[in-house]
Length: 612
Image (cartoon, rainbow, N blue to C red; front, side, top):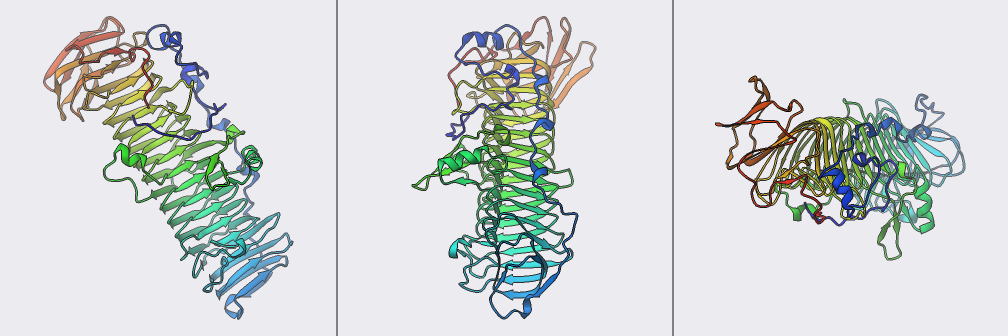
C-alpha cells in the first residue's frame, strides 16, 4: 500500500456511509473497540444502512432550459456580405447567422432577449484580432446560441491566445453572462492558440441536444459555476482539461460564499455521448458531479496518453490526468498558489454515477472524488496509471459491471462499501483498500454485502487500515506471490458473516477472519504450493460440488468460507491432485501445514501500526 500525500477537507460528511459502525467513527486507539470487532464479541450488520441515491440532492431542474420551443428568427445576417471584420449586436431579437465571415461577433447591451442561430455559418477571426469568434459580454440574464438542425457550423480562432480586454483565450466566450447552447445541429470549434479554451463561460452553461466537435490546445469546455450536458454529443481533443467547472475564489470571503452555493461547481451530465482525449483531466467538477446516463450512452476518456505499459509506485505518484473527478473549490493566494476551502454544503460535494457505459484509459485516477463517491450502476472498462476508483472519504458501489484491467490500486476510500454488482480488478498493489493518511480518528472499514467480485493483485487483496466485514456476495481473491502482502489484510479485524469468499495467497502473511465471525471459515496451507491451471473443487459429504474454479495464480495458502457450510458436516477440497477432507466443528478450521512466518493472525491479530 503506497503512501499518499493527499490534500483533503477535514470534514466528516453527513452523508458518509460508515456502515459497519452505525455511522460512528470511534478512536482506533480504543482497545475495547477492537475487542468488539476483531477478537470477540458480536459483529454489526450494516446492510440496512445502504444509501439510497434517490435521497441525494438534485439541483438541475432549477437550471435546465426549456428547449421545447425552437426560436423563430426575425433577423437574418448573411455573413458573406459583411465587409467589416467586426459585428456588434445590441438590440433585442433572434438573429440567424449564415455564410462565411472573417472577423468576430460581439453581443452586448442591456437587451434581455438576444438569441443567435447558426445556420451553416463559418466564422474565423482574423490574424492579431484578439477576440473570440463569438463573445457575449456582461449581462445579468442568459444568452442563447442555437445550432440549427441539419446544419454544420465552424468557429475558429486564427492565431489563438486572444486576451485583449479580458475577452479572449476562447472561441466562444460568455464573459459575465449565462449561456445556453441548444439545437440539433453540428458545431465545430477549432483552436490554433496554445492557451485557447473552446467554450468559456464565467457563470452557468448548458448544452442541450447539440453535437460539438472540439480541437483545442488548452481546455475544451469550461464554466465558472454550473455546467450541464443534456442529450448532447461532445467530442473533444485538447491539450489540457476536457470538460470542467472552474470555481476559483480571489478572496476568502468569496470562497466561503462559493462553498455555500449549491450551484457553484456543479456539473450534470444526462443522456450524453462524450469522447475526450485530453492532456490532463477529462471531466472535472469542483463540488458535485452527477452522471445520469442510460446504457446506450458512452463516455470514453483517454487522459495524458493513458495508463503506462508498466505501472509502479513511482509512476503512479507522478501520474497526471484524472478521467472523472471532483476536485474542490480553491482560493487563489497572492503568490499564485491555491488553497482548498472547506465545503459548507456537504450534500453538494459528491461524485455520483447512476448509469451509462464508460471506457477509461487514464494516466492518473480513473474515477476519483475529493469527498464521497457513489456508483449506482453502469458498465465500466478501466485502465489507470494510479487508482481505478477512489474517494477521499467513502466509496460506495451499489451495482454495475466494473472491469479494471490495470491500475496501481483498484478500489479505494477511507471507507469502501460494496452492495452488489460485478467487479473484476487487476492491480499492481491493493485490490480493495480502506485508507487515507490525512484523516484522523476515522474508523477505516470495508463492507461487502453482495456482488460478484474477482481480484487479482500483487499487493494485498482486501486491505483495511481498520476492519473488514463480509456479509454477502461471491468473492475470489488471487493474492500476491510475495510473503510481504496477503490476500486478506486488516489492522483491526476481519468478519465473515455471510457470502462466499475464497482468498488465495502466500503462507508468509496469512490473515484469517476473527473467531466471532457468524459464518465458519477454513484455512488450508500447503508448503509445496499449488500451480496455475489446476482446479479448485469443494464438495459436500454427499459428493455435490459446492464450489469450483480454475487456479489463476500460484499460491500456498487459501482461506475460504461458503454460506452453504453446515456445522457438523464433512467436506473435501481438491486442488489439482491433492485432496483434503475437513469437518466444520467451529468457526475456525485449519488443515494442511502450519502457518508461515508471521502468518495465522486471526482477524488481523489485533491493533497494528497504521500503514498507508
